[in-house]
Image 1 (cartoon, helix red, strand yellow):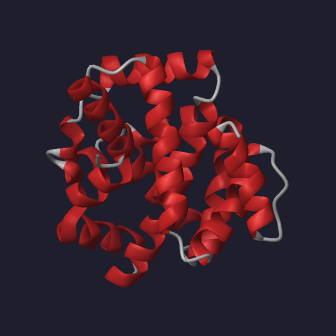
Image 2 (cartoon, one colour):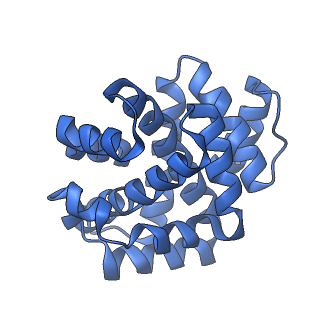
Length: 196
């Protein structure tokens, strides 16, 4: 089964990556690197938010009512339609600036670039999750399970560097112990995300 991250990266393709690179003022490799860090960060935050029944219910309702997957059919429009900032506010709350700063530092695109990137990617990630829920006739519990699987898949694909950085980002943003980038930090954070 595809993950939400796979659906987003497939939908972006080379054109989407080029558009993001232009918006950020970086080359395609820089954009690809930043996307590779931003998507797991967004997914981790959504997983954290949906780890309790109230959060999962709110996210499930948003996906059911507003995110049917159509964003993936025209990702360039979805990235620039103005909905991303609102979505990002729901994902990170008052930690949005801190999240952008941490991602900007890790990816080398700066806080302003990271904020733009997160705003562009948020509608696509919710679109991917919405599409998965719609196609599978999913429930709130299915959403929680999907987020857990996707978080685990992101961890498996890591060579060490990305997830160490993600551990720092999620630890700082979501209230875990950040800083060292060690697998212990990541393990404790993903443990919370995955309910272990």
